Image (tube, rainbow, N blue to C red; front, side, top):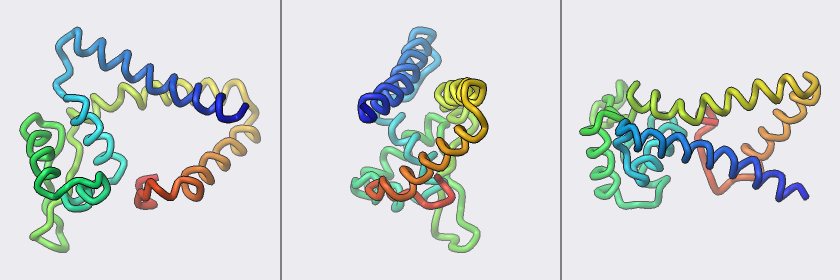
Length: 150
């Protein structure tokens, strides 16, 4: 069934990420809590949101969001960049430290995509890409990411 196949792929991506995170914990490289990891993945996906945009998306209070963001700033995973258009506003930008951390999952995605391209024809890959874009843009309205973040 389609649902089982999709769930299997989604679960394998998650499990690979967890394996790598735990390996890093064992090597003492990881310093993000689980909640902080979720926060950083959201900030990355939202494409440099403000604290208020992050709070709204996560459905948490702005003070709670500010507390979480300040912890991430102290750990060196995110920085606040002043908006050129509204100097009162700051955007959250992941640092290279986080990008290196995040590459745990993106490197695996790249590896799997290389395998997909080797296994399927270019036309089949285009069809898969088109289907995934429709799923992302049209069939998942609950996760309202800005178009540039998709």
